[in-house]
Amino acid sequence: SSTSVMENREHSSLKSATDTRERIRLKGSNRHGVSVRLLWDNLRLQEDIPERPLYVAWIQHSRVDLQRVKPNSLYYTMSEILSYIEQDDLYGPIETLLSSIEARTQSKSLIDEIQPRRRSIYRELLFLACAALSTEDVDLFAFDTQYGDAFRQTDEPLAKWFTQQDEPPSLRVAWCRSMFSHLEL
Image (cartoon, rainbow, N blue to C red; front, side, top):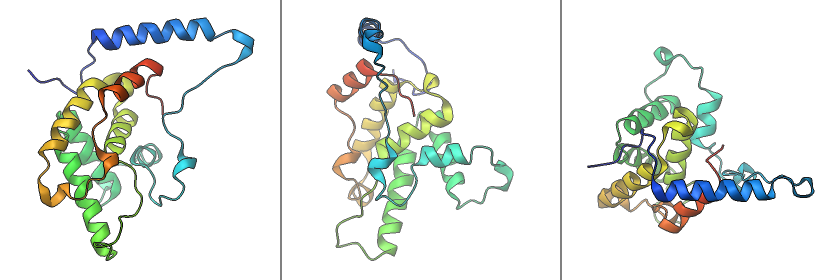
């Protein structure tokens, strides 16, 4: 049985991590008036990347009338990606983003050069899903599992455009994410 990205399931290891995180938060919340807020994204660290993150573009244009969206627009592409994710298909969004990377790179005659710096596909998909579909509606454990499966199934013509940052998160990363904070953008 496969897990659904769109389900909210309680996983025992994630639940215990959440309980631990709450205990830590309660112990340290009133000490010396210090409040700590974890940021999942810091756009200042990515100022050299010309494109906005997909989730930022979605938030900025979320009131767009879908009837007026042009098929080759960024908003249309994001809507298509979200439609795939709602159907528990992460291969389609990966293929869409890799094809876009391939087209941009080839149009700039950068095939034999180093690829320009970009955000990871995993990050773009996860943050877009959480911004558009709400973090409560996205099962991060299932998302990670399905992303890993889709990543490994990607065929060579497109897979050559993957970088190390596109690899699925390790179990250690998933545990840390569940331990320290809910995904807030």
